[in-house]
Length: 51
Image (cartoon, rainbow, N blue to C red; front, top):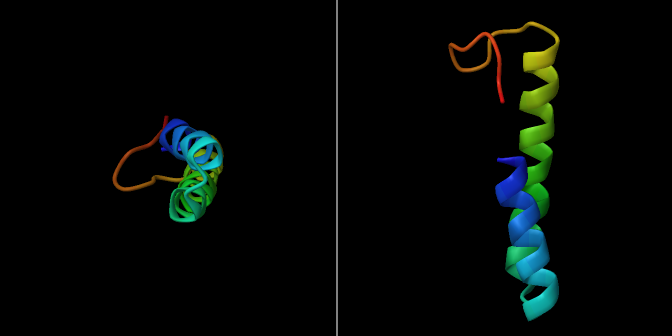
């Protein structure tokens, strides 16, 4: 999810499309939160680790 968010950020920046930039920021934020929760040992969506 983090990688997809970064790709959308780059595409939005290069193409000048604001909605891709916004969606990219949201996906990166969600990905980081899930990554931190998984790293702390909390089960995320039924999984013990989130990559």
